[in-house]
Length: 339
Image (cartoon, rainbow, N blue to C red; front, side, top):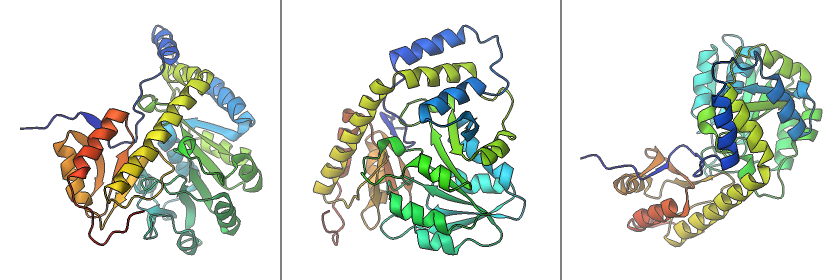
């Protein structure tokens, strides 16, 4: 007998539906569904640029952040080139590299779940066209600080484009976060990737954007699919930006629940490091495989990497309490020290 899914905590989705004002904007746009959207998303590009306080020629919009990432790879990668990234990471990156004929070069994370910047630099050679950093990192939630990122960017060869994936940046509360505008001015080979899927809760509508130097953005835009951003998604993003203060309160609630979930898991004996995303990361040698089974039995879906780790999206309080109850039944790793 199949166990019903009560809580979906596998894809780092927002636990909240769109705000009422956003739903109203979407509804109005649906009434015009017989009309094409803009050939290229110029209006949305200008709105995002104003919101980010950059000029429109620094913004590329695509079908989710993964769509912008694909546009970038198509723009700069030739068959036989390589794309380097920390592993484990967002599952799409090796797939995207293969799609454009590149060879994926995975670089192991540190034992603590951080991206190994030194090892990533060592993996770059004359064939490398793109190196990917996720900040905060997916799936571990770890953070690259401003100083570490600046030092890394200074050492990356100019022929390598740095794809800085900031899909979860709204959930980071670290005082040493990198400042995007200064980075863009100093590094024309940098593209900062962001999305409206996570903090803004518009995952189904598929809108992401990249910030970069005008020359790089122009190359990325050449890969833009005509009519590629639909009118309902455009209306939802614009309405979300107008409701930013309300959405910030939602993000603050998720962050507070993330910290509560981590504290409670640690008190149960799980070794859970700090997270700067909307998830927490449980790793071996703690019993992550048994944990995944217990969560499934409790009606919770989580992102399970067998023999490696378990990424738990932060849900609403009820979902998080269900997680804690399920995992409380498991013994902590005997050699673990409480964090």
